[in-house]
Length: 265
Ligand SMILES: *[C@@H]1O[C@H](CO)[C@@H](O)[C@H](O)[C@H]1NC(C)=O
Image (cartoon, rainbow, N blue to C red; front, side, top):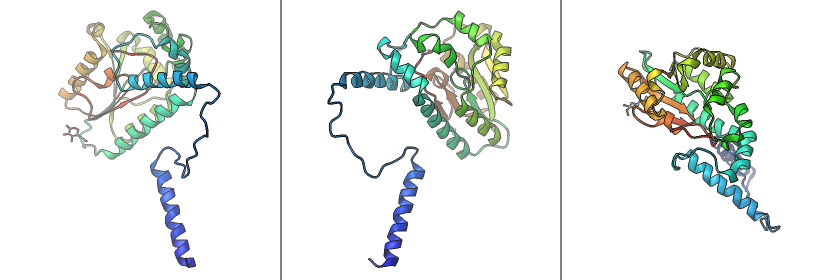
């Protein structure tokens, strides 16, 4: 090969490699090396147990499981590792990135009627400090204890969601917060959201007197129906529970944030 051809070849190869890196969030090694013998030392049982818990978590995220009250006891360590190490953060970032890409891609009307809905708990605010003390979902949910925690207004921000939130506000979406929390928790919720960095939402919708016995999926559908009747177009919806996203008057696109700790119908 002459020098010109060689450098052309090199250029095009490097641009392919650069492109491959740009378009994929994960590093793509060009050469994959498999280990000679995986777990020849008999570590296979532990590995298999982890894989079973991964299968369970994927079934949770894909909404394939029937309603569940606690995480499987054998996955307690697995869920803890996932939540406390980088897995959870990576999954949150992946969802937020897709949501930002979508938000930027839609053309908004000029009537101010395009809406993005956010759930609050495990979507904008993290209750992980509470769940650290309650077995990461191993304990049956205790509404009384949880309300005491909520009353402290100390739930930290979910950073990737704050980025998405600021982006959709800047793009001109109306932002409606639709939470299963009670109207009685409005002021602590406002305090907590503000302390965590959230500003400029257009509505904060909490459960009123008539809503407390309703399954979340019904309560949230009813509130979305009201929005639709007021002429709003629900273009994006972010939530950690499928009951935030499914039902009626669903959003054009829904973004399911990870949550292997609890299930709300
Ligand atoms: C949202 O969905 C509706 C109904 O499918 C569709 O008519 C509309 O064009 C969608 N809007 C955007 C911005 O994609």
